[in-house]
Image (tube, rainbow over all chains, first blue to last red; front, side):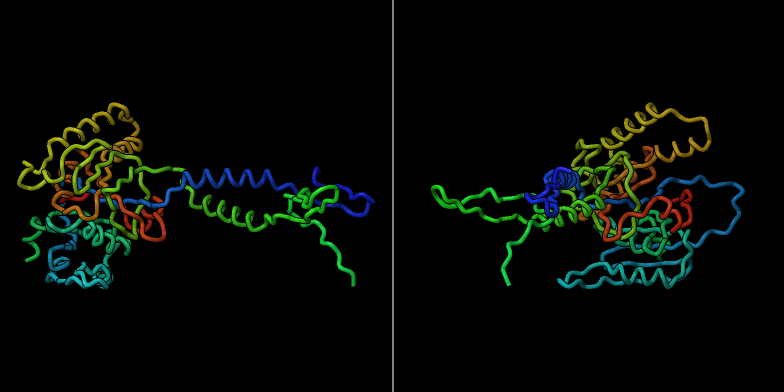
Length: 160
Length: 208
């Protein structure tokens, strides 16, 4: 052990651990990890837009459908044959009108939907992408991942 | 009580006893040690933190100053599949600009299909099918079909839905029907594939 030296008169040991290689290694490791670090955590939200061909022997009753329309005023939520329920935009701390995702999550929670519930998110053309993701995320945090995206105009008829 | 000079400290490998002051024959030796303990502590904490946050998969998406991703709590980890990046200025497929975003509107696009993008997507789909042979095993074939229809949309949060819709429709026409929206994960972290599967019943093919 290179660091162990006997003192002149043979009384006791001067234990000196050489830390230089350890500090060298640490410095190289820190530099490497800092250079390769990824600071943003990116994920994905998946929707399947494939078209299912209708089956001839399909005589089962139509599954209940939940539709969330996003327009200038806020959300419009319609479940199965119920009347559409509006969720107005709210104000953020800066006073800007924003979609009320918390109210949407609360509404979806109240409905006590099964995990495989089909949800149609239908934003109007001028709605920002961020707001569409916000609506999808409101459902996904409750474990409702069976989401499809449609055009608001295409579901306008059923929202009457 | 006599005052004794302190002995050597554990870990003080940088011994500066060799430093001398004074001139001429009589030289005084400085008993000066550099305490490395705080530095080693800091390094250790930094190394542990960086090792925990280290991602071996690397970056799948090319980050762009023009694209600020929306944030979401719930997500799955990204996989390497073809990517369409949409900023306020342009629509980019696999790093190459395909069309200007201003040209992607209902009025300018015929039959809901962006021709330039459709051409690139078709080529990409053909390249995938050329490079990945259709497996005969049914289980592998199902996976092969599933992988072939995956695409990532990496769009700026301010992009209007009209542009997203036309890009999605074009992708679906060209057999890319499993659309993955790239998001920045808010807190927590991405769910593992299995975990995400537990959270919801397996997604079936949807008619829309």
